[in-house]
Length: 82
Image: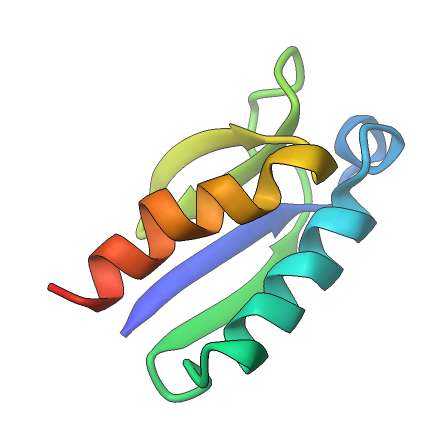
């Protein structure tokens, strides 16, 4: 099981965390990964200078609404397929 956490704190919210969360939710559904991926929201991950902070199993990434598809393919799908 892969855990993905999206920061929904004020700084990330302004940078598009709601859109990132919704896009990830849709991609998980489209790829039928509901039993393989847990998606959560949380407050500050301590990476406020970057884009929307997203963690996968504790590793922090910076994701913007326009890079979600690339992030999902590169980081999520590659881990699920291992």
